[in-house]
Length: 176
Image (spheres, one colour):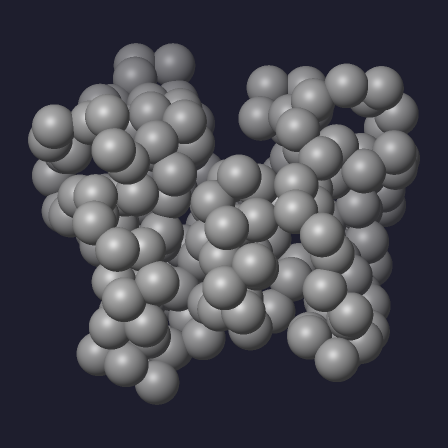
């Protein structure tokens, strides 16, 4: 059975903002390795549209960016949306009963399925479907953006903490 993991870069004041800060080379390598290892990714519409940037090669990309794009393209993506009519390569649209669809994904797959986007993660948290939360804590104060937890935060237990680079700590929590 697959494990659903919600992990995002977060500011000290609890916000995620996809454009506010970029990962260091060390952290980016971590994300590349993670993308290669995932059983797939489950996205909400907003983050899927942002991540679709990786579908087309860009001339200015360096080797790490090309490596991430290849990993992202090869991984299966499930996109939760009631407004999209179609999704891109290696992606499946989920527009019906979210709980049934996600329970089916967990039962049909092995490994980790990345959950992308705080709104979708909030819905999945309310359904009790998130198995692990990974906060990549950056020393930045944003004062705005989407909160990491958009729904009521479940009781959590710290599973581990790890310094990933000179500025970022990975905090891993599981439901208590």
